[in-house]
Length: 232
Image (cartoon, rainbow, N blue to C red; front, side):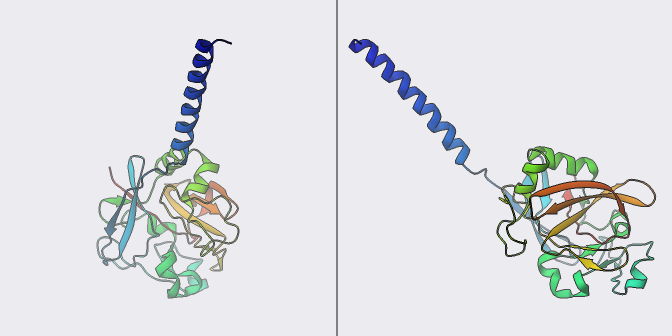
């Protein structure tokens, strides 16, 4: 092989290595996350994060008042909870100490008032949640990108969690229609603003084993976490 051919082969090899290096560099570079804040009517301040074209709360809602100043009833008694047809909330296990990390568990009737989020924000619709999941690459990819990393709050091994979206989803568990509290550390559930029919509505669930699903068949009396998204 003459010197010209050797030099030409060297240039091709160098170009190939350069392309591979740039691809690896781009793949390792973390996307910049933009954070902000929003406050509710009670003065609670929430971290917010920009994901795609929307600003989302990066914490669960914990207001005990609607944005017009009307108080949301707290219902601890199981017998009262299971017959509710109007808005209410509770803390997990009726223990206020859970509020700081996990926020409140609200029934869907509170969501349906349209007043549970700070002014200028709303509970995500089916379209909002679908956009978020699609923007993050679909169900499996979104599950990893939405969950807080580590096992401080999530059950081990919290498979694949990266929180690369900045959403910082937490496993706040839920309140069953009969009033029982279950699955804290294992699962997080969040209401959609979208109802299925007169008795049920949509929710999104995240599980520590890297599962994510949406379900339209939850009775409106369940107690789930709430995130808000800014109005466009």
